[in-house]
Length: 435
Image (cartoon, rainbow, N blue to C red; front, side):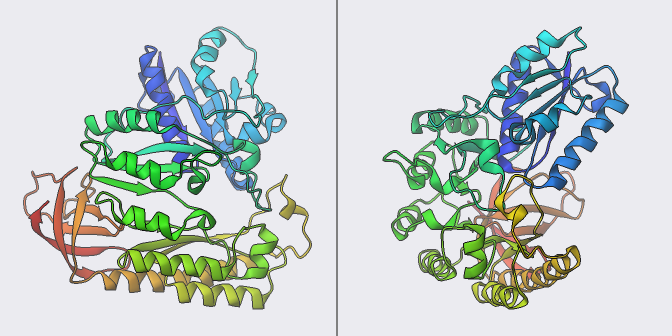
């Protein structure tokens, strides 16, 4: 039998899809090149916005039209958070959530020859442990994601994720070390640690995120360790000092801001102030002078006035982010923000998003210009055009160098590159020496 995978959403979902793919292959399945050729189609869903749900439903409808005989499995955050709604999708043969995906293969085998819809979505409890999914390699990828944390206890007023992922839980250092050792042995030089609320790794234990990074850096073959998105309130100055002592650590910090206005942050139920956020940024730049600091900012949150938005814009400019991911607020049924007064019109939300994006474009260009003249190690990835090799520096600057030999590949190799020029969203350089 053949299986085809479709993934929506975050890096954690990408990791979990890769783990599921390996489990299917171990069980004797072959991977299909397209949905039309597959006996089984796995759709790993995201539910961060109502638009995400709509995309998932549209995908399932499309899959069924193109392959009437396939067993379609809907899994992930959407059915976990909205089980009854997901069950109305009659084109899905099997529906599971985020908790019991290890049983998907068993359910697929049971469903063979059946016309019934199988639904297995279990609720989380406070004593749940992190799932047993593990990954050994990533197809044609230089870097490998490793989920070390799952769940969220924060309950931001706009966010449904605590209902789709359960409470905070973490992977043990022993399991992490074993998984990363295998990935490194299979040729992955860069490890990206990811989680739903990554900065809370080890919560409830004596461990913290720096312990996980140190464990990865100690593994033979690991040349780089990078972090996924972080909540700013859990990163301390002592954590930064520990990380600075690790040669493999990549100084790229994605610190989710959401708003540069304290009033809006409080309404969002974010657990920090702008002053605290700015202090963390200053600490990072003191310890890592060439760090890249990226973020997410939401515009048009309920109750956000023009003055509040202006304050957020000024804050974003002051921080000088190397990249800003901008999102207009989207009503998410099941969250407190959905019923808050002061809902902003779609037009105003879009206008504010466009203005914030302009700020992000300017600060990104400024950051890239600041890289000119520096000599940085670049891990090259698969070539995506005939003119350039491309890869990423440790602070996640996209670097391109001209290809002089069309037959030569630099993929999965590290070279020191001198940055000669900056463009809108990448830099151009020349190789100096190999690492």
